[in-house]
Amino acid sequence: MSRVMLRRQLLGRAARLTAGALVCGLAADAAAHPYHASLAELDLNQETGALELALRLIPEDLARALGRLPGVARRVELEQGAAAAPLAYRYVRRKFLVTLPDASAASGRRPVAPRWVGMEVSIKAAWLYLEFPLPSAARRVALVNRALFELEAEQLNTVNARTARGHTSLVFQRGDPPKSLTLR
View 1 (cartoon, rainbow, N blue to C red):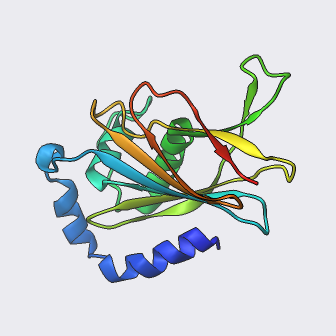
View 2 (view 1 turned 90 degrees about the vertical axis):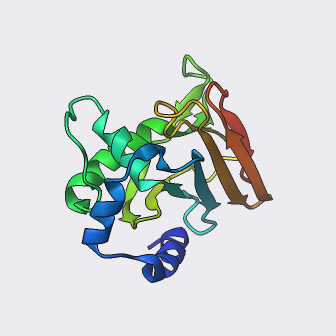
């Protein structure tokens, strides 16, 4: 289990609510919250070389976004984790991108395929966990975090990254280009 997920599980256990309360919370109008922001924790695991992502989204916003995926013509109930997890993975792998330099690619970049680790949902937060395996020679990646941009024009997505080079924060707004992150 990744360090990020373990940390999130320990913090999340204290805040967990029953499924009934979650259903009531997700039924609330999405406009009920005045801010539109996500927070991502991205850690470079020195042992495995993978980037470990913990992405926090507001549950009702994530449910709305999943319901808009192609082929999904229904409201997604996040508390049904077994059914919602594949949709959440499909969504986040399209919205949170990690790319490596690659001179042979037409764009000059090669996407890194993420591995799904899991998700946790409470009344206040939906945490999505992924790992991006990187080659040991990787020194720099480019990041894109477009989560929920299709729902809110004012959406801000912050990525707090911890690498061998230290800590940095990257903020993404609609229309931003990929942002560089030095790993080592």
